[in-house]
Image 1 (tube, rainbow, N blue to C red):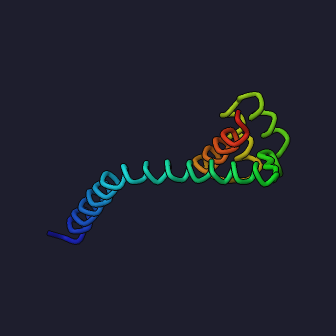
Image 2: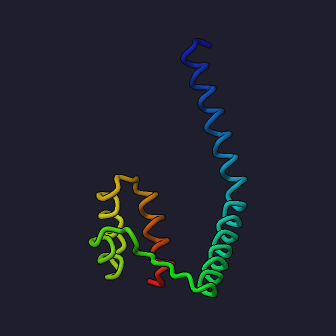
Length: 104
């Protein structure tokens, strides 16, 4: 076996290992997401009870706010990425959180 074959074998084993770990942890990640959503809901209720206003659109560029309010999720993500330079996944997660917390 030459060095190239050894590297390919190592990478193959590594990829299979990573896929196995992902497959095993996937149900736990779902549980964690659910727990986090419940925790956020409780924090929102505590804030409301304490009279603390949450402004989901605070510090967002106006064109992003407009797109979210029109229900144009993809446009909001695109504009948020342009304004901040973040990646697609981060922008999508952020805009979905803004929509959720704004009740959109």
